[in-house]
Image (cartoon, rainbow over all chains, first blue to last red):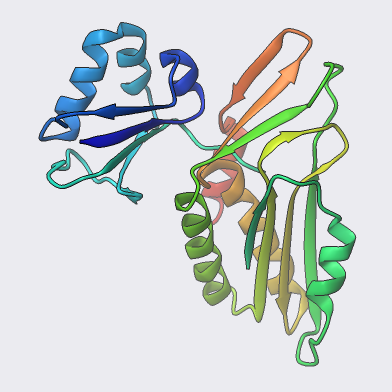
Length: 81
Length: 146
């Protein structure tokens, strides 16, 4: 079981910010597919330019495996200041 | 030192504290970003962070800037949550033996915060909220340092 977090406009598009997913698919790619199958608007938002993922609070490079991961975050383009 | 805060802060007070006990420092540069009013009722902005991750990412970036610009110190105070017009959103402070490094590092850290730091900003106007993404100008600003 793992927590999936959405930030910024991704959370607005999906209508949720945090969800438990059990069982977690084995790759980031499959997780995107799973979330996108239920919600085409979220699928499009997750595929948008500059959307990044973090696994257990570390930036994911490419299509990482989700084995043993407890928390997955999807982050749209960042803007502070 | 990185501080994310939900409470309004006094940039002057933070700057005074940063300047204390600096016998070896010749220059402190600072930048304060304020929330511009948009005419909307309620907060002008809302900032979202990823607790833990956001602090660590900014901390790591500031540490690398300290090394790169040979700073003696650097600090960032950043608001999160709802922010009213006129309140300080961000304060960046840098300390160096001479002014050039302090100015440049302060500019660099602001360019980073605008387009790379894990923060998400929503502006409220008369027509409701809008998520802000880095503009072409913001991306050109950070590209200057590559």
